[in-house]
Amino acid sequence: MNKSGVKGNTAQALAHDFVSETVTEAEVREYILNNKDFFVNNPDVAERVQVPHKQKGTVSLVELQGSQLRKKVRQLSFKLSQLISIAKQNEEIYKVYADLNLRLLRCTEFAEMQYTIEETLQDELDMSAAAIKPFKGLFALPEIQQRLFMEKRFKDTDFFFGRLSQHEKQLLFGDSIAESVALVLLGDRRDLGILAIGSADPIHFTPDMDTLLIKQLQEFLNVSMPGLLHY
Image (cartoon, rainbow, N blue to C red):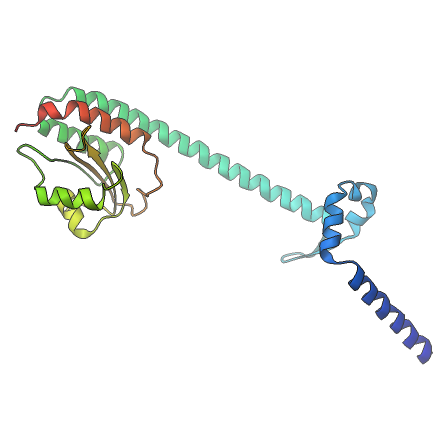
C-alpha cells in the first residue's frame, strides 16, 4: 500500500512537471485564440470550467461571459446617454450664441455691447462673470496689463481655457468669481481687446475645449466692436 501510494504520487508529480514544462499558460491562451471553434466543438468544456469570482466564489465560463457582456452593454448605454446629454447641451449653447450674435450686431454703444454679453452669458449660460477689455479707447486696458496677457496667455494662440492667477482675475473681473476662464483675443490683427468669461466651476473651462462656438463670437465682435469704441 505504501509503495503503491508513493509510486502513484511520484507519477502524478512527474505528469505535473511534464505538463508544466511542455505547455505554458501563454501557449494555451494562444491556442484558444487561434482556434475560435474550440468551445463550439467542445461545449462541455465551457460549462465545466470554473472561474474565481469575487462575489459568487466560482462561476462557469459561460456565466462569466454573460456577466461581462451585460457589463459592456451597461457601459455602452451609459456612454450613449452621456453623448445624447452633451448633444442637447451643445444645441442649447448654440442657440444662445446665435441669438447673442444678432443682438451684438444691433448694439450702438460699447457699453450696450458689454451689458449684452454680461446679461446673456450670466443669465442664460450660468457664467459667473463676463467682460470685454478693449486695448484702445475710453475703456482701454492699460498697456502694461495688455503685455502681461499677450506674453503669458496669448503667445501662440488666440484662445486660453483654464485657470488664472488671482492678480489676472482681478484685472479682468474685479471681485467677481472666476475659478476657471475662457479668454479670447479680439481683432484681426490681435489688437482689439480681450473677451473674458468666468465660471464658478474650476473645471468648466479646460485646455482641451473646442473653440467652434466661441470662435464665431470672436468673429462677430471683430466686425461689430471697432465702430463702437471712441478713440
